[in-house]
Length: 125
Image 1 (tube, rainbow, N blue to C red):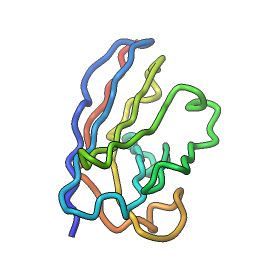
Image 2 (image 1 turned 90 degrees about the horizontal axis):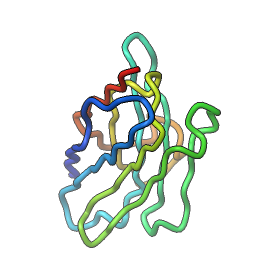
Image 3 (image 1 turned 180 degrees about the vertical axis):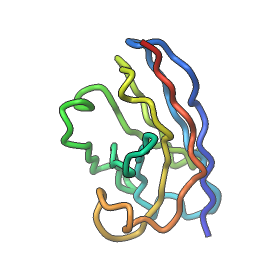
Image 4 (image 1 turned 90 degrees about the vertical axis):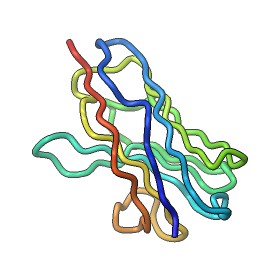
């Protein structure tokens, strides 16, 4: 069993930055690939980024709206995964979720075994 707790969300002006954190319980954190997803009101959950257990592989959403602005990283010694978000835009407003998986696609929500409760990110114009 893995428990995930996100933090770092909040209200920020357009152009600003936030770093989200996701702390995981358990002693096998490095065996899990970790992903970040987001969900805006009235929209489906959307893949943002993922990172393998060893951090050797990373994947980012193809969306032009996110490219080059978000960076995923992890610290296995701290059981934590991060999402650095720069040049934030109002359309980045959403609840951001982290998730953990041991197998399957980085990009499919159904591949993930465990989810956090989410953290709200609101970007004002």
